[in-house]
Length: 306
Image (cartoon, rainbow, N blue to C red; front, top):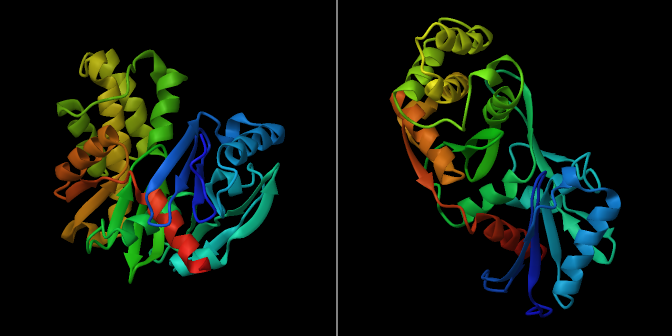
């Protein structure tokens, strides 16, 4: 399918697990899409070339091509580096890295790096920056100083004056998945976890800071074995512990969370869990639809090159 012309651009969100490419018109509208489970972790360099060649074959007349995400990481095509925070769209656009993958010439968007103000600890992100700047361009975040992007590796991002100031990454989603799949807790944990009394009890237990997460996690097994937690609720309780501990960390770094309504950007089911967990700790939040955010981000980056 070829709807491309020289004025259109291509934006590619190329992550660890998935590949999504968009043919974008001059007015920012998506003309065509190409998606596959061709994430960076599943591909050799030859495989990356094959995917890139499919993009060029589908849209041979398209103009500039941009890619964000793990394609620019140390396990991607080339390490596109990181732009230091505070950073805005213009800073990121100035750090574009031109490359050629097979028959496709493109610009890879750099990631963001910060040293957090509160604890002096470094953090990094790659891919989310394009979505964030797209949300800002679409005025979807309101005036909240901190937003959350729930997912496998959740980001809590502090914004100032339209720029990413600093952020925290939490591996709660990955930890839940790994503990559910293998190891001691796998024998008593089933399913992804859901909102309910067990989930909220887990959030409260983590928020109380009575014990560290290592002890609390083993306690999930003890509760099930001793009949204090139904096996069917173990996954929800575990998820609550992990998200509750994550929110406690976010509050320690970004205390302004308590005085705002936190935008939640991500898949609806995961955002619902975070909304419930935040409510347990007395924090208001709201889900934000982000379907067009990455496209807006690529459009903004292209406009800077004018």
